[in-house]
Length: 74
Picture 1 (cartoon, rainbow, N blue to C red):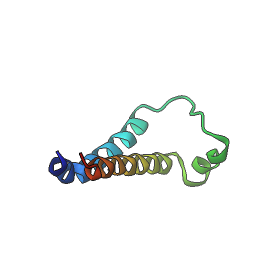
Picture 2: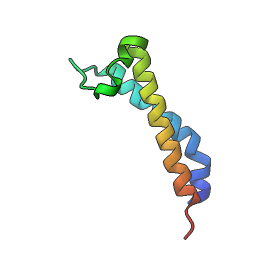
Picture 3: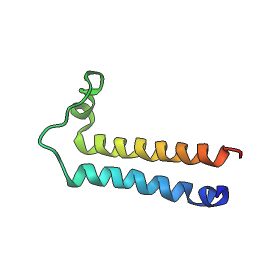
């Protein structure tokens, strides 16, 4: 199992990052409710770049989960 995770962790994280960005681009909501601390970010960098940043964060989270699974010992 660890060798499988080791081989697919980068493609899997790229897939999830791209998929998250695609969902945000393709299915825009009428309004997004954002926390007060980051409400200024889409106004500064734009909504498209904000969606890309969210996709990158999703890919990094997926990569981290794969690293945790890979590092566990039975």
